Image (cartoon, rainbow, N blue to C red):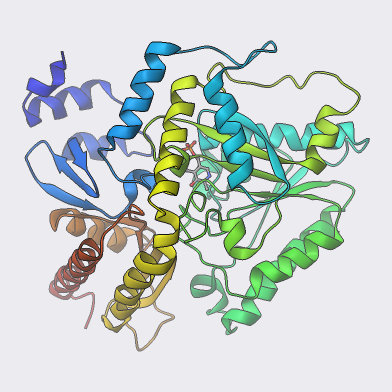
Length: 464
Ligand SMILES: *Cc1c(COP(=O)(O)O)cnc(C)c1O
């Protein structure tokens, strides 16, 4: 049945290079090295086609909350596929899984978010957000409110609208920028605030004030919304100083703009609360989410919509011309429902807060004694280590940016641990079900990886 299962690793790699264009990939480099072929997974572990085992420190792509190999999800999807594999939710139609998931999400998400628009990915959810925000202001009689303020290093996805709202310069250069989007400084103390000689608390407030300044410069009558991840994930796990969100909340309360909390990574337990908005006490008007919503078992995303936004979406009638063939796909809804059922039944979010996060954080912060680690940061089960060449002079960074991070990531794979590198920060975001033994194993592998990286840099004369 599965043709590729009988092929050798080399055959798979050759065919992959011949026909498969990967996301976010340097095609020439990949063709030279060949892809790593992942063939199976269980719990928090992955196996490749050569039989190597990896501890998945990235939960797939920040999405595998409940761990691999969950029969309940597979069974729920199987049943749904036989009952009703597909039907759309256009034209006044619905189906039981979409109804049940809508109700469940309204119950789980912060108070005031009781309506949901389904899509297939985080990027589609954020495209939906941009369209909804502009439609909202048009219907509110303020069509000139068009500008969306995002942040540098923000990540909201890879469609044109999502890439534009995100703050990745490389993506903007490759036709990912559109008019009407403005970016402000992120609350990235280690990289920005420290260099300016500010304490984290001072810098948190200064970064928040950038929002106020941007609204004033652009004109409040032209600004539609501010979009932000509670903790910036793909931008490097940028955990804002304590002073940041309270100050942003004050500014939002004083200004007539919408607030979009992109919960695609923070949502579904990553911080030890159900949502990053719960963790920081945020009150979003719109809340896109995806990834952990189905633990990645099937693609699905959603935008939670507040009563305030709903008022103008409904208005005096008139159609919102927006939707996807797979909005509320029945099998994906079944996967999300089964995933949420597991999260609730096994009290996984509570366990992150009381057991897993304290254990991983203790091990993580202990890595700050390593000669390569300039800062260790973590909230819940998402964290970063900033690699630096010389801890006696923290203003020094590796050049070119990202090369040593990538080296360390490759060494990590060799050691049987999936870590990700963003610039020269090493990122971790393991499955929420990671056990205490696996946490100890993860910490041991990270330290070994740092030691191996340090030895390699020493041999190159790049560190003392
Ligand atoms: C991954 C991500 C997205 C995009 O989700 P896709 O499913 O890859 O389209 C959007 N926002 C955040 C915060 C993300 O981490």
